Amino acid sequence: MSGTMTPSRTALLVALLVPLATGAAQAQENTPDDPRLFTPGKLTVATSDPVFPPWMMDNDPSNGEGFESALVYALAEEMGFDREDVVWVRETFDQAIAPGAKNYDFGIQQISVTEERSQIATFSDPYYLPEKAVVAMPGSPVSEARTFEDLRDVRWGVMLGTTDLDYVAEIIGVDDAAVYNDQVGLFQALQGNQIDAVATELATALYLTAVQVPDAEIAAILPHDENDYGHGLIFEQGNELVEWVNEAIATLQSEGVIDALVAEYLIADPDLPVITQ
Amino acid sequence: MSLGVSPQGSTGGDPDGGSRRPLPPAKKKLSATERFVPALISITMVLLVFGIVAVTVTSAEQWPRIARQFFDLGAMAASFPQVLRGFWLNIQIWVICLFGIMALGLVLALFRALSGPWFAPLRVFTVVYIDIFRGLPVLLLVLIFGFGIPALNLPGLPNSALFWGATAMVISYAAYSAEIYRSGIEAVHDGQWAAAKALGLGQWQTMRYAILPQAVRNVIPVLLNLAVALQKDVALLSVIGVRDAVREAQIYTAQTFNYSSLIAAALLFLLATIPMARLTDYIARKDRQRRLQGVL
Image 1: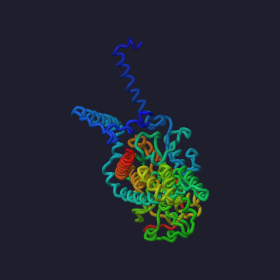
Image 2: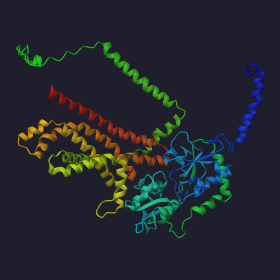
Image 3: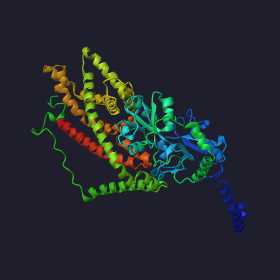
Image 4: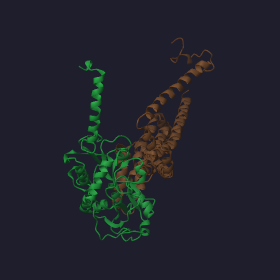
């Protein structure tokens, strides 16, 4: 049949089909069938392995519990996905920032948005602005600290890949903090008396002192760093889905959904001392 | 046999009676073509192969981004001071560990080489030591020593991660160097033992004056090779919080998501290891010449 098709008929068919095709693509954008999705029909989300409370519970992102897991399901619902259509993949922090194609739509693992990082990766608008906390063992020199001056002369430890090192260096003025690969190493060093104080995000500190290292305590809350824009979702650079996701974040924010999740998972003891200078 | 020629042939009945060695063959004079064509082919091939690799890599769609994220000169320069500071720490740890490893390895090898029933416990200890510490990944040892021992909070012992990490490196690498020394000791001909004993030297004296000097000279190239490997493995201490060159580079990468700092660290390591590799080659060549002279 195709052999008998005249050029004019082909042209006519193309003229009819092309607007149809582009019209269909436009109609699909910002819906679960968006062709720009890693797998159209699914929202593929990456997170670290393991994941820690209060961000996610039981090392299972798909249970909808914990701040970030609940947030992703709220976002997915806002964007029109069913619960079953959220697909989780696991990756390390290094994989998250590595160049090259990603096997997911966006990643969520408490990645802080900064100016420098934004030149390499694409971030969503921040969904949470964390406070910092000082964690120490009881009787540590930082337990009685009330000023930055008191915090300067102790041995600090932070985790690689966090903005905590910048925080300790620039806000407190300590430039020889030990840097560990993961939380486990960090708190092993704290218990082994290799470091006196750990700077970490308040939510992480809450979980650590409640579950991982019950002997440790939050010594103080520190003020927010202005250069740290807060946690954002990480996208492969140039990924066009970010605007759609930003709309969803804005909606969740205006409806108070995110505040409710913060209240549920990320609230500290109001009596903790706050060190601001 | 009536001819009186020994089994070695010409040596016994040397016709010219004087020099017993044949003259080396005269060097053939190469023509210009014979000299330049192979060099030309080598150069062309090198350029061709590396050229194809370079073109393939840089024509990749992702190349501009890779270039920006890995080979950004500005980022390399920005991260260089902190990476260099970390690298200085690498060098210090390396030198100190190297002394420890060479000394401990030698002691272990000597324990193992001693014969006689009285030394059986030392030999057993050494065999077990080498089996265990050569069998465990260095990274594992660094983690166990660096985090485990300080956590015991033992009184009187330091709890610095650097100290225990370096100890783990020494313990692990000493197992390898002990085996290297042992192979050097075993390579010394049995006749040397017999000769030393015939002179009335005791076991320790034989080892000290007859065997060890030869054994150590035998294994210097291999030990240098171990030293090169150690130089890079010092970077493993970063996992226990030591801010060496690799860790400083990772810190920069984590801050900026730019990997150029890792390339800067890589260049520093190359700068240190390549001269050492050449030195190893040189010493190995000298050593070979020395031995061949002894034979010829």
